[in-house]
Length: 307
Ligand SMILES: Cc1cc2nc3c(=O)[nH]c(=O)nc-3n(C[C@H](O)[C@H](O)[C@H](O)COP(=O)(O)OP(=O)(O)OC[C@H]3O[C@@H](n4cnc5c(N)ncnc54)[C@H](O)[C@@H]3O)c2cc1C
Image (spheres, protein in one colour):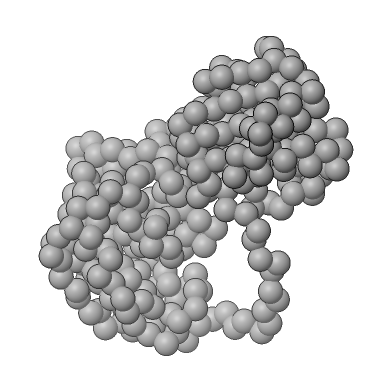
């Protein structure tokens, strides 16, 4: 019997969780509204529980939580891991309520201790790491995307169809409005140029764009530039309230390096920081640093790289 049940709306998230769950117990996947489930066996899923119902064709937290609770019962899972996306967090809370157990959100580390999962998560605005153990018999944990690496370990698992008994949704969607398509994928970028408040005006971001062009990189930013100034879209914001990134190369321009930001870049392979303040905390985590005015340094760097 599988004791760790995984659900993620995105397959990449499910693969990451499967890779970690192999260390914690016997992993299984809850596949809702999906027919092509073979990929999960590549990452070590011993069982894939398929729940099909027209009411699951689109995400709704209430219906999905109901379906997951039924699959958790059918699978005998004591631990449920969910991708900690916006939807995943809503789902995790509702599922825990249905299973009568505790839940932890935004976990950044998991370990097994005396048959219970010990989960780590940032607390106090990212200044400390809290370690939580859920004491109820079952545990629901929402894990931040990109926390674990997806590593293949193919098995010949079993597909199990679960007869779901779902009630009609209590929430009706009356209108949908398209959101402007996200123009950036900072999470998947191999090279990332991250801009901060060291830029005095929005027009000056052209300097960073020239550098990004020369390095074939993507632009990311600190919270102020997205959430306060609205110079860039929130899909580019990196940190505890934004995206977590693991680029091979990250070049940070005019970013001080506060913990709430740097938790989003700690997985970077190589960090280069340019900041005019030699005491800026970003230099503590940078592999290479240039103490200087970005308005002087960046154009010269971009020109040299372009050549
Ligand atoms: C609960 C909470 C959640 C948060 N979540 C996030 C988050 O997810 N992401 C995030 O980014 N922040 C987040 N923050 C905000 C965070 O604490 C910092 O305030 C923010 O990251 C700072 O952004 P910054 O580095 O762009 O600006 P600043 O801290 O103002 O730093 C600007 C830097 O630019 C340098 N500089 C200025 N001019 C130049 C120049 N000409 N050349 C070179 N360098 C120059 C300065 O020396 C300075 O170091 C959060 C805060 C809280 C309380």
